[in-house]
Amino acid sequence: MVEKSGSIISMKHLLEISKLTKTDIENLLVKAQKFKQELCYPKYSEICLANLFYEPSTRTRVSFELGAKRLSLMVTNIDSKSSSSTKGETILDTITTLEAMGVNLIVLRHTEDYLPLKIAKSVKNISIINAGDGMHAHPSQALLDLMTIIETKPKLEKLKIAIVGDILHSRVANSLQLIFAIMNVGELILITPKYCEPSYVHYGTVTHSLENGLKDCDVIIVLRVQKERFKSSENFDIDDYINFFKIEPKVLANARPDAILMHPGPVNRDVEIENSLVDSKYSKILLQVQNGVFMRMAILDTIIRENNYV
Ligand code: CP
Image (tube, rainbow, N blue to C red; front, side, top):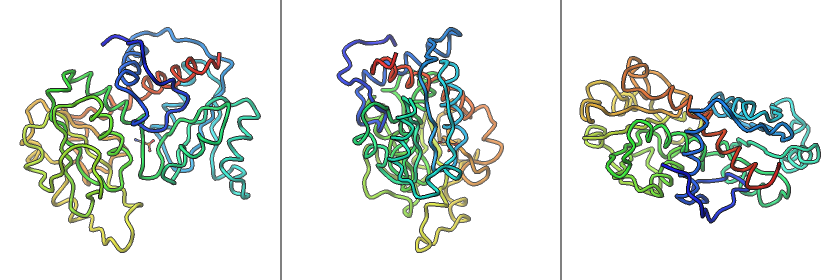
C-alpha cells in the first residue's frame, strides 16, 4: 500500500471513523507502518499535547504519550481526579485554559457519548482526538486494529471477520463496523447474546450463535464485557455469558485453522477468552498494543502537518 494524494479531508480533529475517507485511512496505515519500520521520526519539539482522561486507561493513554514523545512533542498528562474539574470547572473551560497555555492537541477520553464532537465545535486553535467517548466511538482503536489485521492478513476483501461479545456497550464495535464498511471487508459477523444486541447495526450481520458465527472466520475480535455499563435492571449474569460466549479451544475449532484472535483490552481472562488462548499462537493482542503506538504517531503527525502547527 502506498500513500495516496487527494484526500478530501484535512484532518483538524480525529472524532469518529465516519469522518474519514478510505484514502485518509490508507494514508494513516502507510504512515504507521513507515514509523514502525524506521527509527528516524520527525521532531515536533515546539508542539504540546495534553492527555485529558475522565475514564481509566492504560493502552490508549500510554501509547499516545509514548508516540508523542517519539515525535519529540511536549506531553502533559492531566488526571481528572486532581484537576480543577473537581472544583466545578466545565470541561470546555479546562480545554480553553489549556489552549491559552499553548497546548495544540488534546487527547480526550470521557464517559459522555459525542462529547469530543461537541467540544470540537467550540474550540478554534486546538485539535481534539477522541480517545473513547462513552459507548459511541474509539476511532484510534479501530485504526490500530485494522493495521494489525492487514499486517497478518492483507486481503481484506477475502476475509470473514467476527466481532464477539458485548456489542451493545462497545464504542470499539461501533468504530470497527464503520472502518470495515469503508474498507470493504469480505464479510462481517456480529456474534452477541440477545441482551447485548444493539438497536442499530452500522454494518454486518448479527447472530446469537457463537458456533455458527465463527464458522470459517479468519479474524475473531473479542470485546470486553463492560460490566460497569450494564444497568441493574438488565440483570446481567456473568456465568451465563461465560457458558455461552467465552472463546475456548473447542469453539475456536469452527474458525479457520490460521484464524487470529484479537481483543482491544483490557482482557478479563476466563470470561471473554479462555486463559490459555490469550497467550496462544492465535493471539495478536500484544501486536495490537505494539501497533497502537505507531498508529497514534501517524494520527499525531497527520494532524500536526495538516494544520500547520509547525
Ligand atoms: N483498548 C483500550 O481502550 O484500552 P485502555 O482502556 O487501556 O486504553
